[in-house]
Image (tube, rainbow, N blue to C red; front, side, top):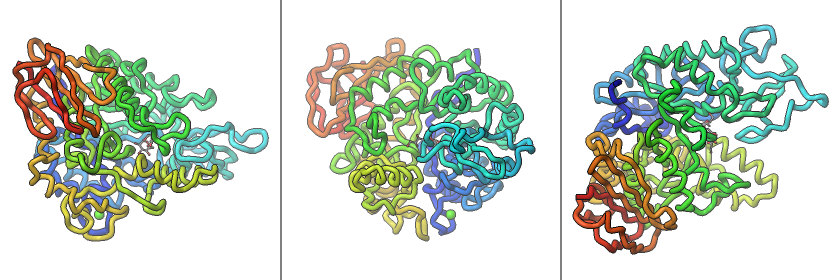
Length: 545
Ligand code: TEU
Ligand code: CA
């Protein structure tokens, strides 16, 4: 029997480098800045960092457009800085997982520069080209995720290239074995430098067949993932997490089932997409629906009971701040932040904390479109205005769901710009940094940070938290989320109020009586009462005796 994988008890922490810590006053976070904050992460108790892209990039999509996979962006530092980060993190027991963005490259990558100049060079076939339609227009009407057509014409070669995202992000042609070997070689090069794995950006797109207009989970996906496993991952003690916006309960284990030899876990978004408007999309979010959310969350707990493994998260750099989206970022901010953490961190899987979540950071309240930086928000604004959506309506949606809310800089202290930079930050710091910041949170009796530290330690120390079987309680309850974890005779009961009103619930007799409270939002209480009154956003987790 192989040793238990290290990530079964570890918690990950996502760093978005440009917004974490700026060491040189240019307003942009950087690798030396990250190194200077490693003690904060060691104190939190995390096992590994997922580092969003730091590779050379023109930064059209903040680094998710890579122009050299074997170099570091100037604004973030150098390869030496990266080696130092790996070593300094290791010295604190923290591993580094890098972002792997290989569905597409930047249009400024040397490969694409060669590819767009001539049909004759080998690099041409690293990308996806099709002839114009009869009228000279694009081969088909597919729209790009960030607006406009998914096809862009290049007169030098008389063809269109395919880009699922922006024109600055041409899709790599995974059907070409030489391209695949370039990717595998680059992955080995990074692993040999000492990193502990990869978070794979939109990996479920690599098996696409553009002629059939099949993009997500296309026909070649699992063949390529298995090949990548054989060529790069097999025999190495590394962690792989695939990002997929299409993976479902039906397909989840194809990526991470024990006999598949593909990935270790997937970031799946059903619980997130739940909150988007079915036609108008993310900029017209629906009111939060707890029952649907629970259904998505717990069906993945069920799916991964005997096989596969879950990646647990509520926030990342593409999503709004979790207290703002799922709960309350005003009166009940601290309780809400602690409750969301309890609910997620006591499930089975590997939890991920997104920078700032550990102090309950909130959405920015931007009032004008020029305060936004994200190309997705800016492009959709342009498109929707043309379609007649009133600007204030769009801005209201953006205020709830734009990607930039998670990208405002980390709030370290009440100093100017939250202590993030001594210069002018690339995007405004949330004005609430005067009260919401690491320094003041750590000193607060209801500290969000201490709460996270406790939950992260519980996963390291408790078999029950790491491996217990999850069973949902009250699945149809519109305001309260509850579940049980069970391992042998040990039982854990978690209950959380997701509403801004007091909630009274009669608890089933099997959960009531003597207990030991291991996590709470407001004040601990030792025993589990038959009738429990929960204050707004109040939660408890008890080990039952
Ligand atoms: O995101 C995948 C993706 O599909 C997003 O475009 C998502 O739909 C959107 O962010 C929701 O608002 C990944 C990265 O995480 C994201 O930052 C990149 O922009 C994107 O891929 C392209 O690399
Ligand atoms: Ca900097």
